[in-house]
Amino acid sequence: GRTQSHRQKQTEVCNRARRLISSRADKELSAVDKIRQLKALSTCYLAKLDNLCAFSPMAANISTRDAWLMDPHLVDPVIGVRRLLYLVTPAETTFEAVNSVPNLIDESVPYFLLLIGLEYAILTLKGRNKSMPINDSLISLTMGIFSQLPLLFTRSVEVSVYLWIWENCRLVDIPVESTLAWFATLMGVDFCFYWVHRATHEVNLIWASHQVHHSSERFNLTTALRQPVLQRYLVWILYTPLALILPPQLFATHLQLNMIYQFWIHTETIPKLPEPIEFVFNTPSHHRVHHGRNAYCIDRNYGGVFILFDRLFGTFRAERDNEPPVFGLVTPESQFDPLSLQLDHLKQLAQSVRLPYLSWTDRLKLLVYGPSWQPGTAARLGPGIYPEIRYPVRPLNPRVPSWTTAYATVHFIAALAGYGFLTAHRSQPLLLLVGCAVIVWALTGVARTLEDRVGLELTAKRELLRCSVTAAVCALMQPWLCAISRSLLIALYSASAAMWLGLGTQSCFLALASSEKIY
Image (cartoon, rainbow, N blue to C red):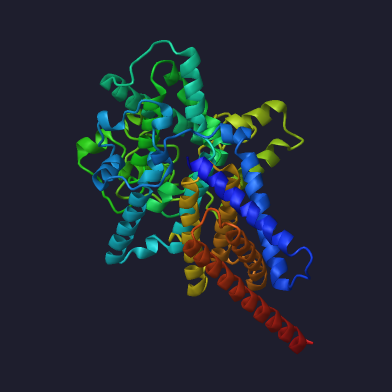
């Protein structure tokens, strides 16, 4: 019904465009009329292209969920909080088919944001709000959005491969309603996650994608959302043994619950918990060690929900009271650009592999050995020698005017709202493609304004172009956006473009005046 209604609206738009053109074919059009005609034509062609994309192979891969799963909705607060702690029952988290498993991570986003606000309030009361600066937090949230954009088009690669193996290669038929199967999947997913997580740290090619999660020198709840985009496409094979036995519905559910649980353990606010909990479960104390760059913290505590597998396989380390973890990469990052953070390590790895003096064996080892390994090193993970931590530690925190931070925050909120809009329109591939491009461009622009590496004049040019194009895209979104939302977005991006035009012009005049004075 929704698809038919959407096509009817598209047909009406095209008909209005044709009538506008034909009624004025014999008249000389004014400048305003020409703009209206161009807008009508653009909307018409976009609608036609959307119809073509609706029958593309990409559209065929989109999960055919029920309508209520496609629409954004807020789950019961009690259930939302219980999911964060994995305190759910088999009855409420068992679904008949894979396509009926909701996106639990999207449904948890409101509670993520609520807890982030609560953590900031607690840190402020303690006088430690500098531990959660806005710039670093916005970059972490940006990475979280980036990591979820591919899932707008199709289900995750882990679930897709798992489902194929289950349908073609399974050894037994276990009923999805089985409580024993539910608990077996809980433990199986966490066991596999331990090895997935260990591989992301001990295999250089996979570390190249995972390192972005450790790139922040802060450790707070926003860090939990600083997720890699490419990692899932490199580690999916480690989950496949479960597909021979356990139903995919349970796997799709527990894979999400496992990740949701790990959100709340990214914090310095919660101290060590009672010993029995610390012995069995992954806690904030254990995960602080995992994110530390102290020598005793490197390659430790890989667990997801449980810490038992670290104790079993010898990778556990307890947090030391006399040596608190210092967070970040062993060579700290010096930028906020989200695309560079996601891809730079891969670029460096590709350059290393192409060095002419390396043998083919060494090139292979560069990919599959640890990140610290170098040719001539005997140990697979490298010599175990890391850069000395210099105290006092000064995390990355570029100084920019307060209005720049306010501007970045407003545009981030607009991009976040855009992502929420796209989650409700998964069945329209063209809209998703355009929307994702706009969001990536917007969030990259926000990050670059927060570090101001290139100066005001170039930043003004970049943002003027971005805001102008985005305002034009919003103007063409009439079939999908209500009038109020569209007007607000056009006003925001038009005002921003005007602001950057003024700032860019002022910067040019100042530069010209300065050069004339020197002359």
